Length: 262
Image 1 (cartoon, rainbow, N blue to C red):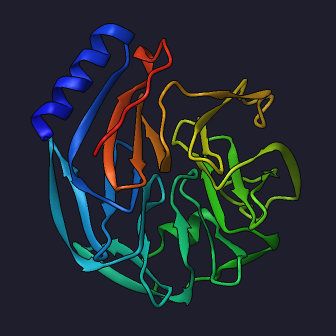
Image 2 (image 1 turned 90 degrees about the vertical axis):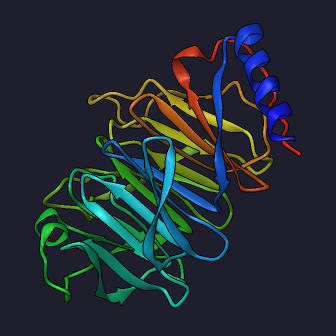
């Protein structure tokens, strides 16, 4: 079956100009940032990509994030961990999802969808008791990058946090953005991707320093349904509803094509 899948993908590359590779393994969540890729599977096992292979990392997490702010994760008990000195160190607090993609600052949400962040000094600290800063509002997913932070709430509404900086991770206020997504993920370089309620992938266009919210959503030329997206260094990482892992070179995505894995 896998040989057949690879033949199908090779045909799609030639016929449609889409350069996607099916990566061995299954994951429920993946995160790419600062030139690294980490993920966790259904058994909460942690992996990092080394070359073309997944290398097992000790510990158990339900969510892992890698970026300029380091490598962080949360477990089933919503405990928070930071990878430092060659291993996982528990940090005081409780979050269900954490994001290290900001400019060496951290964002995350807890089980009640409350939002928190750490300024740069705290994010880089080796202390285990850190001053998490509450942010008003409720989000079920929160992600940060070069040009600020984005999030989605339980109604799938999308928000951008204004005036976030490494020394003022709290920002100033929320700006609602058109559309509905189950998640919005921000790349290290500020690129923003999202997945909507039917599993289609979108990219936010027009993002710049002067216009960090961008101008519009554009459909990415891959068909899902997908449940998770991450982006770094020109590569889009996608997980479909079966947990299959796809690595796509976005510079070759020129025609609409569907990938199906059985």
